[in-house]
Image 1: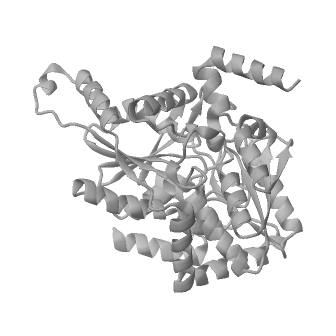
Image 2: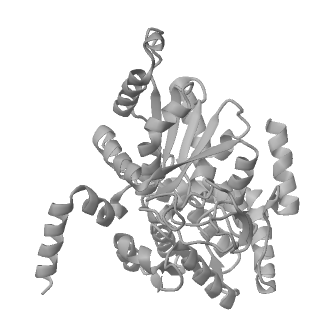
Image 3: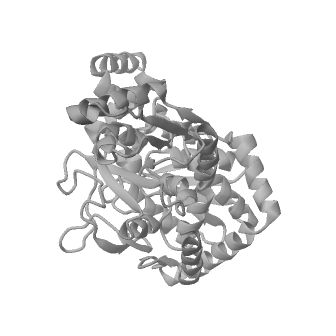
Length: 434
């Protein structure tokens, strides 16, 4: 399995695709910029000085390694739930308690896994002699990381954000502005992440000589799926070592939320050659499976080419990309990382979707049981665990990647979970501004 994986990766470098997914479908104007970025990254990948610098800044500025937590209270509750669902004959068998571990990326500086990739790409930007970063953001965590790193390295930063996300994630908008970044609201199209990507790419095309496009997920034209995945793989590398130390073996199942795919691929990649480790991605099921009310690409995978790469997208019968919905801005995107599409096609990574309601329940559950308030994106995984333990009855050792913390979601979670008090607080704040 390990040899097969390495051969596949070499072929990807040669063909710039994962099977039929990935590639580089861009205007001629971008080819040279992508070639330069590819050459810069492949050199940096084997440059010991670059790797030492990246490791140092991840530790001293980012706060790596992030901790692995045994979620004892959550594990006990899910064990009881699983046992209660068994038949009377099965309940007489020896009870195998569930062990749920959490890789807590929310403790990383800026509150999410996004910093891993941003630090790596910022170093590449300076290596190429560029002094401005342009980025897109949905939940705001990628934008916050870009703004923070730009301030640290004295780089200019322009961050594009869909109007819908701009207001529902305003705490991060405020933080980005406070860090000196220019946040540009995008009112075109659906006014969400897809449209922010379009606007960021347009700006990049107009400013190629001075600007690096710091793409936040493992998608887009080559080499972005490769370098984002590699920079995020520090999550899985650490988790693999920590899990072996904790239990003396690898887990039965890894779970992560899936928007574009950066946190899930960063978590899964170091385990891909471990055939006994199952991998499960949780997408945004939104309000329903009706078009426009969810962001679940893998329910009915449809191949398409959008924003420079080939993958699965939510499309109608005419092949038009459709609006999406999720209570979490970071999962509200119609496409998926080409490598994840390939791994799904090969049967290596499976997918389920969690509804908005399940995500809110996951947020509440992890907060109350373990004292960790997760971002709504990864709360989808926690909310789906009662179903997951039924789908994977043989999995007694599970690790979940909590890719960020929930501070940013206060304007969403409060109005759902503490509606009356939240309304009164906002009224008081409004009166104080008059």
